[in-house]
Image (tube, rainbow, N blue to C red; front, side, top):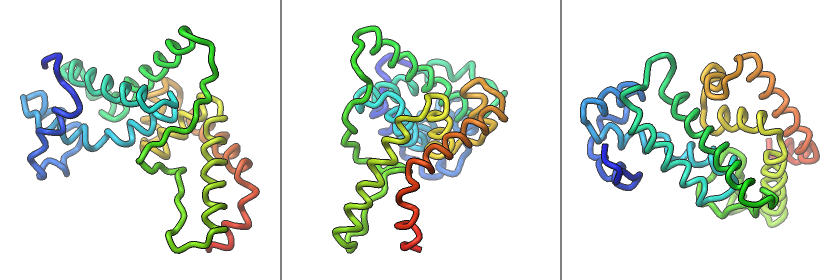
Length: 216
């Protein structure tokens, strides 16, 4: 494929709704045969969760967009060597994870500033971004905002290994076996990291348990 490939040009070829039910692997096979619309569906299917994963890792909108763009560019360049030893999603997220690591390393090398940048004003809602009901009381809206801030802060404070497992599981909907492949660890190790992450997040939000019970 040419070097001028971009997410925008890929999505522009999305003219076959019938492909939307195809598996990732089937789309990869069709793309290998020259069907650019198959690539468009892969991009549409994974772009948002991939961006949200990258955003929580690199904590910068522009950098996250670059990770997504470069991930798909590498998928395009390496699609002929993609094997069937695992699912496409695991292969793709492994590329994205390595790019996130490279981004953070490069940032650290350029400066030793804190990575705790202000929360980006992304328009995409994620698992942890809870918004208040439009008809809710002012008090509920305030509490909802507090929960969102506390949850995001707790997520960012997780050890890197726990945070990435949580994101891949809850935000990207990967199975534990797939996550194990992405992070190059055993499935039991991945499950252990997920358990510790959930325990830390639950502890961070324990002050809101009574509020949650009132909403049931």
